[in-house]
Length: 228
Image 1 (cartoon, helix red, strand yellow):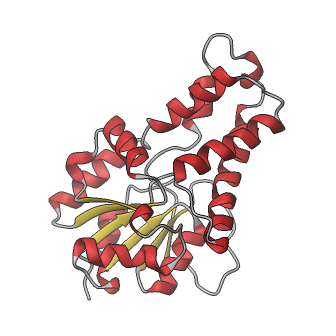
Image 2 (cartoon, helix red, strand yellow):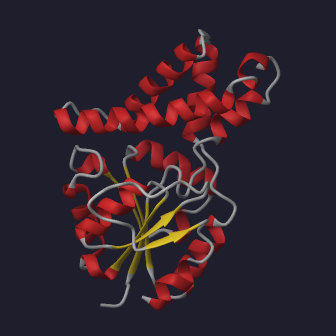
């Protein structure tokens, strides 16, 4: 089957998850954060994903905004940054994350080529609306799909089921794109065509499935979708 829809993970794929800590670190009075923002951002992301997996496995679901705040609390504690104002500032910046530079043009090219476009994300609807609005990409997205519709995080198969329901497509008609190797791999196991956006040159995850394609950024997604 030819590809009809291109579906994207949000955080780390379309939106730069390091942007919040990086931007806050450059603001006046944030000298302590400036010395550790990269480590904080990395721990924040690792705990955010780790907590989502633990909640999925144990059935203790909470929306991704709560998980994001809890992960940030851990990262701040690790860096000994006990500053409620900084916490609120980081969360405010996370709510309006910037998109990677190639995202608007790439999505526009997909729409011009006739592909349906969508986000499939762990993010809560409110988080995703904030990021999509801030990045001004709402007009080039047909659907913004949140796991809150099923109350469990990726890589549960029920999450990937949401794509077919929202876009009326078979798995083989979907190119699913994620910066998370585990997400792209699980989507391959589900039956999607997949692309892993490996921006920093990480090794392949050792899982039962593999992403079908590996890219360094999103620029060539329209070309890839047209070939499949």
